[in-house]
Length: 219
Image (cartoon, rainbow, N blue to C red; front, top):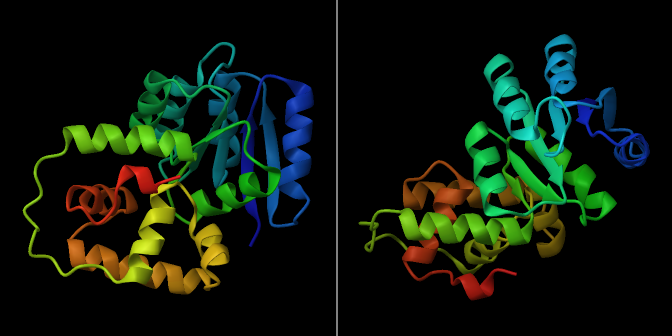
């Protein structure tokens, strides 16, 4: 199944390069290109894409407001931010607006395509530096966890948690650990069950608070 993407980027040459990167594998199709934030909202409403690839600094409507409007009108469309900015204010505003992922423009081309596939599959994708900012904020603000009696994760589960905390999607985790993506998904499901959580972020935060992971281990 082809993943349909609307790309929001105000520089034409950058859009051309990103389109070439995304479409060369044959699994992703860029169905429309937006040069402004308002155009991104309108094109999403018209084309109903699976994923919107969103920059922050957009004319007419910035990426934060565009993301918020897109998620209001098309909640099943995943928004993946691709930007040069890693400011805390932008990061948390976009995640609160409903972005499924946040990547910096120094990402490798194959990682970008993998990230589009990951957010389409319902995963959360964050650049490693962004993931650390998010984790630090969540650790500071989270309530004390009452699960000290939880069954400890296996070593394999800890390996997967470390890589998930670093922002790697399931396919990248599977490749690094020589597993199938399905096996990684099953391990994450077991971790969620043990902790009584519903997301990778919750699992990583709880693992940090319980001492199963340390921020220093997350590269």
